[in-house]
Amino acid sequence: CRTPGISGYLTMAAPDRVERRMQRTLAHLSSVCLSSPSSSVQSQETVQTIRPRPAHPPLKWNGWGYEGTEFRLNQEGQVYLAGDTYELCNVPFPKFRSWLESTMDGMDVEDTSEAQASCEVHPAIRNDAFLEEVRGHYAEISMEDSERLMHAHGHTNEDIWKLRYEKFARCPDAVIWPGEHAHVETIMSAAVKHDVAIIPFGGGTSVTDALACPENEQRMVIALDMRRMDRIKWVDRDCMMIRVESGIVGIELERRLAAMGLVIGHEPDSYEFSTVGGWIATRASGMKKNTYGNIEDLLVHVTMVTPQGTLEKNCQVPRVSIGPDLHDVVLGSEGTLGVITEATFKVRPAFETRQYGSVVFPNFETGVAFMRDVALHRCAPASIRLVDNMQFQFGQALAPQDDSNFGFLTSYLKKMYITKWAGFDIYKMVAATLLFEGSEADVAVQQEKIYALALKHGGVKGGEENGKKGYNLTYFIAYLRDFGMNYHFLSESFETSVPWSNVLSLCSNVKARIRQACSEHNLPYEPWISCRVTQTYDTGACVYFYMGFIYRGMKEHPIHTFNKIEAEARDEILRNGGSLSHHHGIGKLRAKWMRQSVSDTGMKILKAIKESVDPSNVLVAGNYLQG
Image 1: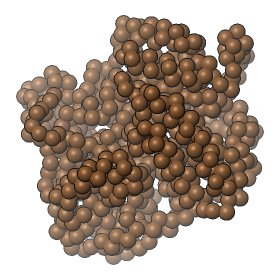
Image 2 (image 1 turned 90 degrees about the vertical axis):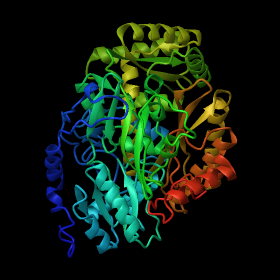
Image 3 (image 1 turned 180 degrees about the vertical axis):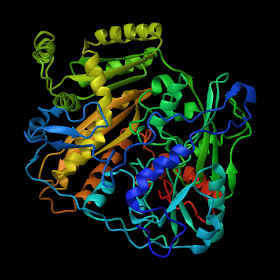
Image 4 (image 1 turned 90 degrees about the horizontal axis):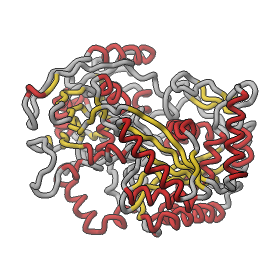
């Protein structure tokens, strides 16, 4: 319902909100072809904003992903994925419950931790002069508590805990959806004039506390949700570039490009929900970076509105030598310097074929040696990821039910071959999942090289279906974290990049440090720890860690204890030559390590940029600057 006394600024009643947004979204399906400094108008196309699916289903208010999509127990007590969003929805995973209860120390799916039905939101702070000045310069505005809550957080472990069991000390006071670049300029100018704070908001998938409002902020705080700015402005096929607004969600961008026979290829784990502006703001990396590059490799031009005006270069060209690159000021800025409104990206012709694959290795050491060899020979496919034994077992346990005798027989024979004839130990073996994209000829060449290197390192082909399952499992991880919370299980993932020479020692030492920290904090149950190598480079790799534990019976606050243990794991990563982050960013969660990571002089430079661009701290999130 409407909040009393602010008629004229608000959306309609909450039950109609989803339908209204879908209708309004459909109302701006096409956009005008704008000229670009990089090429002539003749080489560009007027773009019809194609929407095969007009809008996403509603999102959960207290967890990851789509409303109604969640892991549950069926009447037979088997785990299944409810909903209709994914191919595996409503298919039981008959082995998963028994694996959970035998592997996760203390797990008991009969002992639930019920979430609260709603989350309290504090009264909003108003600045009427600001609201009046921006009237008409947005697509939508709301001060409804439900919207304020949805924009108060990202998706850290602590965020979901507060949604389920506690509350946020501070939420945005209003949410504004700008509809075009000029709207953002007007809103920013009014915020400076009337002393209002702004936190840019993309897909809300941050896992670094980047979206958290400072608890003691006394000004009106605006969450500036960019997702109404979702147009493709132009396509230049001569230069293979596109110009897009920053609020377009990754999966939707790829759908529209596919209709034009193009692909951008940036596919982070969150790409169903994250926006291109968020990708730039966090300096993101995608699962297919080996073929398409990281976000900094794809970016040609970016426009960002700051409190001092709009920042952008005067041309859209492959490379310049004009002093320090201002794109590097925008990349990774995490909403502290400005609001990204538009960007130009490289694109490619759509690939001819997509094929999956997998390889099983006898142990993690040989798997890492294989990954290093792939990097050395520069023959990595679009995606190649190595999981350790614990995660390998996890993936096997999450296999869907197969009612055919043939399916069971095939699985049985594969297991017998790997363990009996190949001599692999099921409690040591690991797997690499592969994704190949490109022309038929290029993919064939890649496969030949990859499987030859695998054989050199004692690997055995695991099949295309296992590769596909392993790749798509990425999209279920966050849903599983929420499922675990139902049974007193806290879990989180965190990542780093590390030189090849340190990969094995870092993985081993971080796991050991987590176990030691859990013991020192007197946890009642043993932790669950896993890792995987997800991206390869000439000089090193990205490593993901997953950890979790049952908190039932703890004396300390579970989340506070979890955060302390994760911080000790981060200390160990840095001691072993790892980076503070490979692609998640810093936010406020990792800010205390920034000075250690970039030096005292580096922090002075970063703070000087902030003070120059935003002297009154309109962009109030404070990410990465608190170290």
